[in-house]
Amino acid sequence: MILIRAGGMPSVQVNAAEGRRERKKREVRERISDAARQLFLERGFDATTVEQIARSADVAQATFFNYFPSKSAVLGEMTGEVFERIEELVNEQLARPASAQDRIRRFADAVATEIEQTRGLARDVVLELMRISAPRDGGFPYVARVRDPFAAMLREGQLQGDVRADLDPTFLADMVIGTLNVSITNWLNDPGFPLERWLRQAAAFMGEAIQPKAADKQAAEGSIVASAAAAGPRAGR
Image (tube, rainbow, N blue to C red; front, top):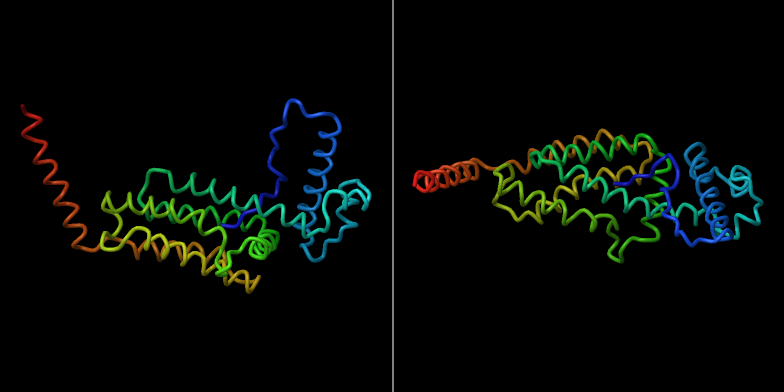
């Protein structure tokens, strides 16, 4: 849930009334950010210097410091993209018509695929995100962004009969997110951890864990039959 795009900063919607000076400042800031992102991807955050970022952006070091107090500040700016991308993935994957199990698998697969493309930078950004945005209880700041959408998706799955109905959907959402997040935690502690494989395995495991029990299936089938029977006489009138 931790995704940084390799292609540069998202496009900025520019105010039509933006003056030449403001436009130039914005463009220089974006150029510095893009240069830093590329260097972080190629060399890693720790191995990249402000001098290298400034040279790549074709600005003086003094100019760099006019926009950012440190290279950590550039990295910190990227953390906002994490929240935006998480919401995009939730909307893209969880909103598609499919079983809850398929939606969870697709979500985990999308996260794993994007992390594979920007692995080193993604980890650096998440660590920075934890440093500057983590709540006081030590939790993960992005969890709150996905809890409600996951709960809504699981509630829908219960109504459709493909998610167990004996547990509250919010509890199930916490279990699904928590299981996926264990993989993230292990990866943050060990950069060599096989995150992508574990995310996909965790999604498959939780897909099985939320399967409806036999009694739930029988109740769902009985409800469908009863609804069809009740609709039959009315349909014939």
